[in-house]
Length: 74
Image (cartoon, rainbow, N blue to C red; front, side, top):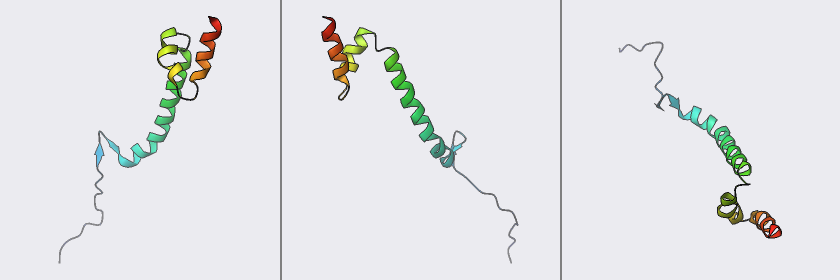
C-alpha cells in the first residue's frame, strides 16, 4: 500500500503572480477604462489644429463634425 497524504497541494500556473482567472476578471474593466481615457484625451486636445486635421477629421463617422466647423471659420 502506498501512502496518500490527506491534504494535497494545488498547483496553479501564473505569470508575474497573476493567474488566468485574475487576468480574465480584470481585462474587461481595464479595457473599458482605457477606451474612456483615450476618448477623453482626444476631446481634451480636440482644439489643437494638428489633432483636428490629422486625427479627428479622418474619423469615419464623426469626421464631418470637425470638417464643417473648419469650413465655417474661413
